[in-house]
Length: 599
Image (cartoon, rainbow, N blue to C red; front, top):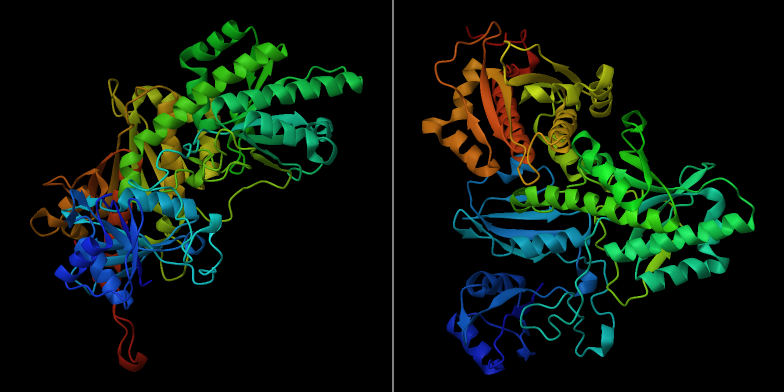
């Protein structure tokens, strides 16, 4: 990693200008500067000098009115899922928060090596984090190259000197703005009768190829899912207009095939949508759905909650009417679904900066766990004008485990390897109790099975109580699932405004002798915890310990902030418990020492 990429270079800059800057800062280089329009390349004698150049020059040195951007030049073929993040404030305890990271804090600032589930996630994290200020420290991010990739492969497009195109053009690079922006819309998922799949594909794939070309879309037909099932899912990745055009064409093909085969049953349009969005699609007292039915002259029904499972978080939206009417209904339904998704993602932007590569699809909170919907949420859509693509394989259900599953399993894992059970008291609006419990307790039972946690709603403390306590008991991953679904349910049922974040109060009980460790000397620990997580963390003064000698820690914030705070506090408690354990006697002699008790 001795080659450097120098970006944001002024058009007036020359190789001599860059050479002068390197000499001024006493940074040796082992080859000439290759200057292009807006950027340049140069070789350094070794990696240490390359790192020095990045640290000294990037974002700090001005050349003809532009701050230079300096980073390792990693050819596109060698870009892996790994990033190195440097210049992290030295006191940040990253190693205890993220079990996926390798941390070196021997230097004045911390260095973190991060592995992401996909290259696209690594690219997004690099774009967001490079130069991001954390407590007055500007983070510096670079790729860790994939040594297995062929760095010296012939360059694409006939490039010279072995330089491979570096992906999306940078500011000041040639071609900036010429490449259409990739779509990031929620893909359309529909169910079609199995007997029509062959007609949709066509002879040697000719029909589906034609659809993808005409609608500029990527279409996945999941033929291998649910062998023997009467229906198969199809996923369409494109712009909203492209998805609607592909859907209409598929409906027309099915209708023609039904006439040719004398299939007399009605063929409704069946749209699959993640359960988290269905509540907002329906609207309060069903108003949104009724309006769509009236406006499009269709009849719409939605599959019951009881059909949901851990591996199938989607509801089936069945639309009956003419092809024209169903097509209009699809546009309106997906418009609502996309709006819900975008609002949820916007609410998580702070967490995306706090934890790079945070997987919003983790554990069913957002679409992505459903078959055919990978974590990219449609980032692979071809640009307008491209032919697109299709596949007939099995689902693209991810092979990488959820990011949060790894995080959650790391902090409170006992020696035995099984995560310990935790109890959290989550406070919800009293009016929301019915929505959480569901008809005859169906929703809370299903949530308990899904999360693998015990979930109970405590009785009201008085007649006019405005909040009710939900008692959740289970290991970290179960807590994440259960609390995430409760936060999502309150959003779905409109207990919070469409642009309002769901913020709830959670209580964790800690041993009274450990409360001081949570607070820290002069409140240092709790203040750092609040800065790190964006949650409000309070250990009320003058608490009287309960019968188990425990006191309450209050955490208030949106879902991800609350989860980070809970993990950090549980980690502190784990440290306290380890310190309380008796040390083994020399050579194993003598009985074990009793655990000290505090009253």
